[in-house]
Length: 70
Image (cartoon, rainbow, N blue to C red):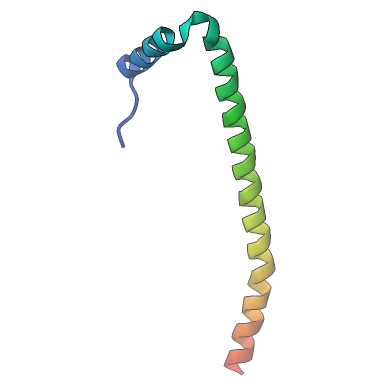
């Protein structure tokens, strides 16, 4: 996957200035920041739920394995 370098970043900022204007950029940046924050907290919450469920399922799996072996 290609990485974004300085020239690409400058191009994106210039296009944003042209499209949205300097007055809207702070609002746009704030909205993007909030979106990223929400995404991170949601992904952290999902990861915690998965870990919790895996820790609950693991003992059940061990019991099933013991029952099958005996």
